[in-house]
Length: 82
Image (tube, rainbow, N blue to C red):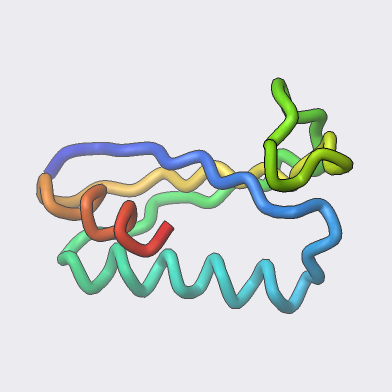
């Protein structure tokens, strides 16, 4: 199995319930691709390195690092969801 990392940046006003639901969706997608989530790290709220065009007033985001392992199709499956 290969090891992968995915860094997800969410809107800073996302509620805890919504964050949990999104992370559960990501985990389910990886599991569905016969992968396994090794660890999810919350990096907290951080300043974005650039301003997103559609969100000009948003300068921060909630960062989550997902470490997982699986076959080569696992990252592709996660990417379709993201």
